[in-house]
Image (cartoon, rainbow, N blue to C red; front, side, top):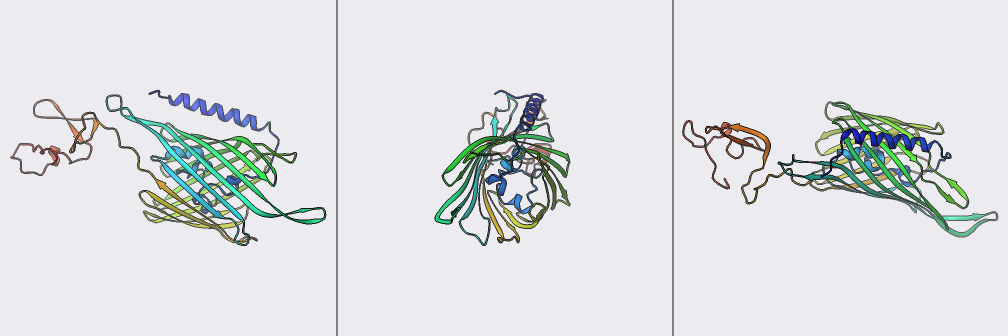
Amino acid sequence: MIMIPKRVLTLWAAGILAAAVAGAFEQAPGGAADAAQSWGLGARAEALGRVYGALADDAAAAYWNPAGLAALDRTEVTFGYGRPYKEIGGINVGDAVIAKPLLYNMGEEAGGGGSLGTLAGAVAFRRVSDILEADDDGFTGRTFADTDLDLYIAYAHTVGKKASLGLALKNVTRTVAGYDDSGFGLDLGAQYKAAANFDVGLVVRNAIAPSYELAALRDAPPLTLEASAGYELFGIVGLAVGGTLTRELFYDAGAGVEVTPLKFLALRGGYDLGDGRPRAGIGMEFETFAFDYAIRVGGALGDTHLASVSFLIAPPPKVDTEGGEGEGYIEYKPGEEKPNEDGGTTEEPLIPGFGGSPEKDTGNAGEGEEKTPAPGE
């Protein structure tokens, strides 16, 4: 198994970041938002005022901050759907994401296992149908549709114990009436744990912007810098604040709060300065399943509703020692040994007190004797 030194990984990521940002400043400015940029992935970030770069630690990080994918310890699959405007029908938005940590097991003799990072794939769409067609003489009686389809491939890896870096390659396809085109782009992200309860995130969105041409009009989403911070208070309250700045000096900001009164329940609220609309939401997470709901309150076209469900697939077993065949086999931590009466060593079990550890034994062994459990006991 080939291991990537952390120093090489850091230099590699920094080189991509510098090259991509330099290339982005050579592009023409733009302002069109793609499907994911309009609604994001998942409902949690929406409920927190779209301030998620520092907090992203699930599959939705593939969009919000790809560096957050490094926090995953098991495979996660997420599906999302939304009704953007209560007063207008024919508009649908949705997404699907799968994120998988690239874990490996080399056995104890080779130094245990590790991770090659986390890989994710995502698709997001937005479709507005039944749009009335018009020309210089008025409505023609015909209708058309406006559709965006975004595909993402994202990757993240930790750097040291406190930081992670990530990137997301994307393909954006836009279709309006009989015109369609697509383009490739690149987003970059970083997360850093500045303190035990304080995290910061940085995202360079459209470092390489996807450019598309419709009816001889070329457009591309703008280069955007997003910075955010998250702070945990009392272990049950999470605070988030952040802002964005585009190349054309357009800015936006937001804030959110998440309260977890119960282990499986989260209550959320947020505000986005860009549209001036408050948000609210709820999240429930169990061992293998999670549900999130968010609502944007108010607006000329009515409330916006978004929901997502996630399926959490259990991780593979931890490092397994050789010779562990058969029931009753106990997994041991490598390197933890204890002298025995014969002058040799006895490995301590992975779970303290399980498997006949002398100091934890409460059996009927005689004084000065150690109880040895029977097979399968």
